Length: 320
Ligand code: ZN
Image (cartoon, rainbow, N blue to C red; front, side, top):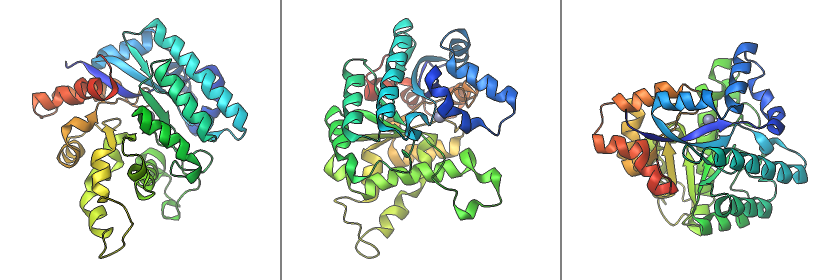
């Protein structure tokens, strides 16, 4: 078993359970209960699952949506802070096994920037996880320039986690099986990342780094098409570089929720193996399955260890 650092690992603390409840509303009660128990446990259950998957270190991020769905700005700022302090305390109990991503109140760019800096510098978190849009506002919104300025200066990873869209796309109507993780979240989250590129965020802040799960939310598969349709011949979007440049330079991806060779090989070919990190998406996916998959997939051994932990050590400053 190769040792691993896992990046998209979730937790909940008491004051965030109400934000989270609607995301599991349709599930059978036993499944909901199981997810809640696993999200709120930092001991035996979580560590046993990590051990079974060969995960030596988990980077914990708050299970969504958190304050991304909080309509009162002062409450969002206060809750994000207390959630981060809660996580820091849990990490202190097991610094050998846990690291953290900050949870940020994106309703207020300056408060989010300050909290990001506090979490990275004081709490030693290795970036932030933002649960998609904040009450319908995406991360390319002009009011968030001060946030990107700080993220650029800190050169720290801003991981965009999937969330439900503001409203369902008409094309999904009548097919509930296509909603959420099947397809809807991929389109929502991939589009969110593309908004940052097309808004020129990475032209203005070239050291800004965005993380995407699920093997890059299909973006690695589409590089050629993005470039071919956004040059002067079709629709000049006014960027300094081709769209693929930003996907290859400013975006880092994880394998979360994707235990399959085809998208992995595409991502390696499109982005390079040095920008891909391991993620299990505990407790929403089976960590053991993800670990076993990476241990046994037919890839070069050096590539396997890069993805398993070496890239995370280098890119996030962690120790496996
Ligand atoms: Zn997740």
